[in-house]
Image 1 (spheres, rainbow, N blue to C red):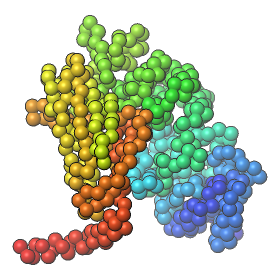
Image 2 (tube, rainbow, N blue to C red; image 1 turned 135 degrees about the horizontal axis):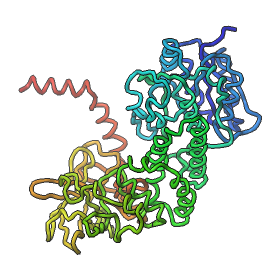
Image 3 (cartoon, helix red, strand yellow; image 1 turned 90 degrees about the horizontal axis):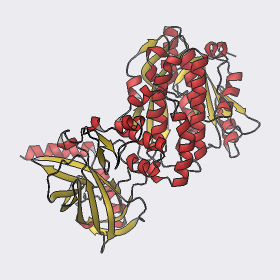
Image 4 (spheres, rainbow, N blue to C red; image 1 turned 120 degrees about the vertical axis):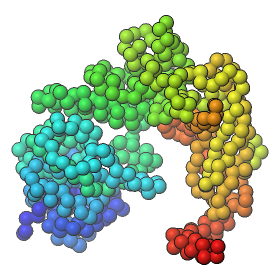
Length: 552
């Protein structure tokens, strides 16, 4: 048998439907001298039969089946490494794909210069909407060879094992295998590979297609999407401790701050967006697991975070669970706290009282947010719905409370507007915000969703209303936070010749904005949308423009 240049292992468990797509992406590789090992973690569905059928279709495909389910990714990868015949190894998950030139591009980088592994760009595809992005694009923007991870510790953020092609000799020399019996094995394996590699090459070419299902059912979601489980938190923290131990054992403690920053900015941040939706019992368990580890992290790692993220971390460490929920709703957006307290020197701190500890004063200091001085268009306000009442048809009455801790708005009533843009046309509903006390305003807005101007073919999508404020000719648009517990409201609406089912609900993730969903129904869905889609194509639009210009 001809020795293959590269062995690509496809790990699979109960994924008979998607396994053929993954294997097809390997069979379509421009570099054909590869070995394909399907490593089945003892599936209980039709996966074994599908794997055998794929092997019968292509002599490059081999099947491996574990005698019992391991519950993770490590064992099926390790068993495949044991039987792999090629000098270079790659890994693919059964629900993903390799772009056609992935093997060719990474192998060429190995042959250009002797390195321990090569890596490239990962393209992420949202299954729900088809949106495509590049994972950590700033790290793979240019071709370069690094003599060890110390040359660019930011690469610790790129912890995927599937974006890389490893020299088999490198893995064997260091007895490097995937850790079994734990989750988030990629993070430990990649940290070890980075730390042990004498040199590795990065190429900007896409080498992996990663399909993301952010709203998959919790029972079938990937491990990364099972953040609702306390065991998931414990698994992630456990792996971080193992990485910390490896850095000490390998004599690379100088990487600790960069690694800690990665944990805070990526791993902890993934949980932070969910914190407003967790109950007290869950948050208490979360704090019990997380806080002891947070106390071990380098202070320099905290200092590199945006202030809102530092606030959430400090409130968690202080055990202020209500404050955690409140602060976490602003992450990633210019959302103000409800209240700010200043000390005798005028230093503003998050919340209604001065911090009691030196660490609290350091972490809750909001000076760098420039609440009083930043440009009005980027100022920090907080708009919350305090009462939501359905009216007749698709009408709503919202009571909105606006917090202005920087006192940017003048004394007295404020003119405001609620903005909503289904399709291309914006609906603006003016209303008045009256002062409640310094820095707090409240108003009532009546929103009739039948007034929203929809396109001829209807609108199928979600929109989040915003609040618009104006001052001295400058405008500011901010999020409208919804109560997180109100039941979804649904109505059928016919407007402008189109029919829709409209659902009003809290967002259910991240800040928890008010969310309005339109879904075409009836003739709009069956007739108008298909017809407009056929007509609204580039060739038809260009021909229409050509005829129009000729008639002028």
